[in-house]
Picture 1: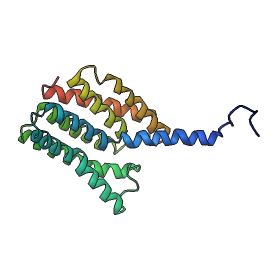
Picture 2 (picture 1 turned 135 degrees about the vertical axis):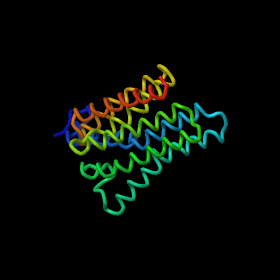
Picture 3 (picture 1 turned 180 degrees about the horizontal axis):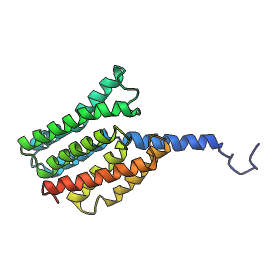
Length: 212
């Protein structure tokens, strides 16, 4: 069936669906928790450092425990066939991996405290430790969305230190949640739970560290 002269050829429905799927995958990849945590600590280190050397010390000591170390660990698990995919789609795989994540984030919190890092940076690391511990427990029974958690926590942290300027970026939260549901990686309730856990853990830990 051809379109009338002068009109564009109709796009087949399967192709349109593939475009939405690709878009959802792009957002899922770009807003991966490893990437968003790295972006957060780059910003925090830049804002709170006094010198270039101070910036790199803060960035390395935070990024290693939240992004570099955990990412290397996950890639090693995947390369050796210990997990089925990089998203750890199988719930049983996630539970074991998150035990290691909790250790990474806990050690990172201690490390930042020992080097005298600014409270906002140490509190952010502690927030990741608390969230990962809760996620590890929840994963025994349910598959909460770490993507939803991973995009919400950094954005809330930025709002705490920079007021309303980061607010427009909060639109990324529903976009990432949509992507995870569209890809059938999570249910609506699972992404809402991820957002809720990130919000509660971030605000509670920040209050404990007297950041807010």
